[in-house]
Length: 416
Image (tube, rainbow, N blue to C red):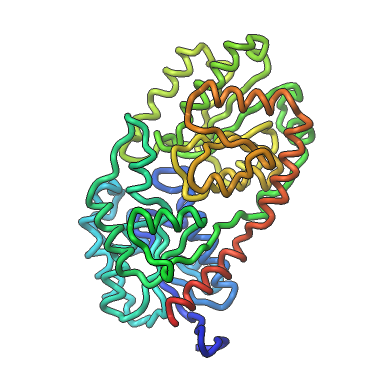
């Protein structure tokens, strides 16, 4: 290896595992979301620093290339495990041994310095590989079963015990556990018994070249949107965890209070169904009709990030009503564009959004409280602009280059 300190060696080769979803997938489709962005951006930034990064994912499409060279030093490798077709995430645990064996048998001579698992399924495969290759496993959970179960609503599915047990085993055996925030580190300790010497705080980043401050007036002129419109934006997968229904009910409550807003208030929901409760999204159009808001609420499918940037630019406020987030990349993207955020006072959103400074945090999911927060910002454009300016400065601190640097430090600890 080259370019390392004697006490803290730097890895020359890293194997990243993203079994259930590929960094090549479009966020917002199926199981693709913030994890996909995280893996893709981190691998790209590590490759730019001279680290050779192999990202392994399960092969789901017979027509896609086995190996995709994404950028210097960074490639995505699709491994056969189970049918070459989509498989529900809850059925993937049985394919973990085959996935790990496919990597070891086909690419095990690469002599990686570090394994980096993303999500618990990849961590399970990483444990098999780490034992065989005698290299350290660094694990990023992204979400955790016990945390999700403790924050779920009554009608949300409970995360299965096989996942809880798997995550506990990963925590017991991983060399380093990276957490997005100190709060997530505390959750790893509280729910799974993680040791202090295992934990490394590695905040995610935001692509500041795509998401940056933009002029709302010019953006609306460019896209034919009236300057008097009051636009609330939701971006995310259409699933109970992300809770777009909370914003639907909040907008209905706000218009009920103030009927004059029916002419100007719009809620734009951008996303696609996802997960084992994907049919849950089928009820959203009916809820919109029941509220009589067909003209006020627009539901659009997922969008590539440059198009999301345009929607952030025309919005007045971005709502993130999730029941739990390890961080909340949507909140960070919105702030990078200079837009205030209303988010749930939970998990990583407490770090992504500074309450009263870059946006507002709402306790719980009572539509009346969410209507209060939206009304507060809609009625005070000057304050919204101040929050947006503060948000842009706040988001500028979170770059993927910083994430790569913190990840390299975590790898060095694992090697040491």
